[in-house]
Length: 428
Ligand SMILES: Cc1cc2nc3c(=O)[nH]c(=O)nc-3n(C[C@H](O)[C@H](O)[C@H](O)COP(=O)(O)OP(=O)(O)OC[C@H]3O[C@@H](n4cnc5c(N)ncnc54)[C@H](O)[C@@H]3O)c2cc1C
Image 1: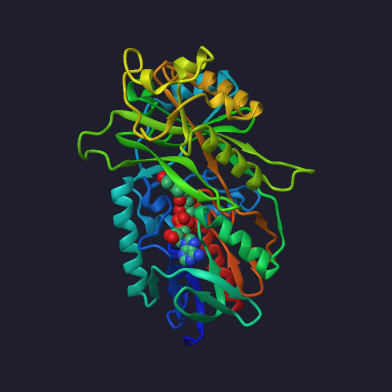
Image 2: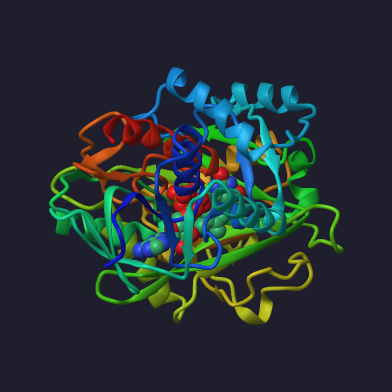
């Protein structure tokens, strides 16, 4: 067993790192340790790393008001030093959108790309080490003995006074079981479910004027995480409750100006789903949809050209590329098929309607060649019932970041870490 640390932070994503920065900036004398199961943080910091500096993008409104977020966004910017991208001709799109009952949010954005983000993540870890934090990579939190305030990792036992758990979206299942084991009460959380689209940049030229345009459609549907330049669709592996693995889609881009680029754009169209009684778990529902997609895709996500979808026929490997279907998918391991066989009707209807509205605002996005990849699912742990405003979930335990549902993006995750640090400083 090691000596008791004042604060143990689990996860070196933006939420965990900002907690460490804020704690040590306020109190040099604190002993702060940070661990991460990976060699570099595995979330958005190292995947495209586009950062949004406008409320409410990334801030779940059940936890944040504009007044709470504003000063912390300023503090976040002072650490992440964004170079804000210019936007052009946004008023044209805004007017078209408004006529259709759609909102286009104007967001202050920066974009480092995957390579730039990995570089930033390494720099941030070095900076917290320089401030005196003991960072241990490739070390995984396995369990917590909350009564004794001892964290059990795959290498040792670490006694702590305060514990911050920020395991990100992929850590949502771990967080869930931690809440069960430590008796932290929670309520069901929303899930975001939808498609990732991939098309030629010429079919979605809005990205030349606005890197990641945020369109908000009726029925809680929105565009999300747009990537262009050297952009690629990727899949993330999730382990389901009974050990059955499934993939969710995502996207990223390398920093612009490097290499030749794919000339393609990808982005998600997601619908937020909140289930009420008698269904208890949105996560379980979403996981079953993910597994259904695996059954239909022979263990891979599905992809379908808009041209085939419109005709009500499945896509096939033999005809997936050629003639009007004039670009190859960047995630070629997906299975050509029929997404409408795998998607619940209500979600598909809302998303297809939104895609038609989008095609009226940015004509071209429904070109027959556009690829619809299924499924893209964003899971968050069930929402902890926090005992205070700083995201303390049980005495001595703070749960923050995307996994705990206090953020949905890099900057809000960073702001969550600052808010937790304020609470910890008051408690110590
Ligand atoms: C592929 C991808 C692309 C994204 N792109 C963007 C983007 O461009 N812009 C944006 O704003 N958001 C993006 N996001 C969302 C973004 O990742 C999150 O909003 C943000 O990173 C959340 O920060 P976090 O600190 O909560 O978690 P993360 O950044 O996910 O960090 C959590 C860390 O905890 C570690 N961990 C997990 N479990 C354990 C454990 N048991 N023990 C020890 N360590 C553990 C993980 O290895 C990880 O490094 C993306 C997410 C993904 C997955």
